[in-house]
Length: 466
Image 1 (tube, rainbow, N blue to C red):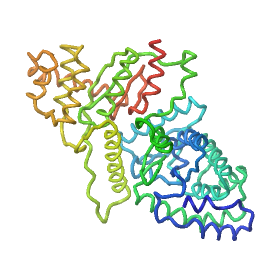
Image 2: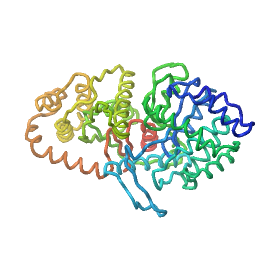
Image 3: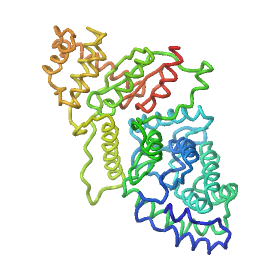
Image 4: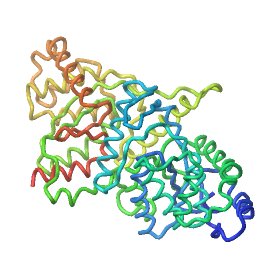
């Protein structure tokens, strides 16, 4: 599609001739992971995360002078996060979500608003789950008329939609945005219900079948990257793989605010689960940051529900089941990819292990020998993921405590009584704060899920320690 649409001239022909030319030149979606452009980017205008990825991606496109093949992907949010509808006052009037889904949605909006505010981007909550296929078809129409038209269209759509000033399902409103973006619109309505609809529907089906499940998704040489946290690696790939591959990271736009004294202040708490490979990959960069700034970390254990191995495909799988399997497969590849950068072979990621005993061991060290807490955290992670430490075996945990020089007298009683009570208390407190996955960072009552936030956390901690 990228090669075909990139060759389309501006619309200086009659409407049906243009539609016919677009159909002829851009209807081949046989491989949604291939393009003549070096980078494919899938976005959905109803995704605030895709919104935040637009400008950093433009910056890479402009800096490197490359072509980016922008493609629409219509999210099926109810199949993963349930659905809800708000009234004009912002009150929920209809919902089909579990408490866990609500927690994830609320965190997502908090997160995008935090980063959006740094750039003056307004993100108001969507009043319902929108069908964004029409505005995606508008994207294809704008794309056929050149980069400038597409950028103008995307900018207008994103800004107005997230201010609740644009109805994504109104074809007349979409046509007006196209006009304001400088696009020719004669024939758009026929295109939107005919050729464009068919083109977009084919893309949605084939992209999902190829492993695209969310936005923003970046594709380089057939390799999929979900989320703007991968932009450092994407830039590294596009510039020849010079030097060590960078880790995931969100762009930090907070430096001017930090210099003005507006940074948060407080202690850094890091929430971990020893059976989480994502938490394991966060330990190294987190400890390096603490060493650089002289910051003490308060390690808190969260015994999360073990990740499930994706079920084998079945002929009667619905969209939700397929989404969960595709997402699980992707996350496994992604963890493996970044672990390999550090020379780590993690083996099986989905281990049905109970990390309660290792978590109680952490509480014991914090109580009996606080100076050895970090050593315990690093040692348990390394032994579990590299040497198959049995974290369900009390003797193994006791031996490790002995190894790091922590006292062990009374540990068995602590495991049976006070340790379990204390762990349950911490679990409750963390969940009340909105913690639901690991690694999670808590800084001055603000919550950050994932090591991709370390650049922003560093800025806030630096302001505190300088």
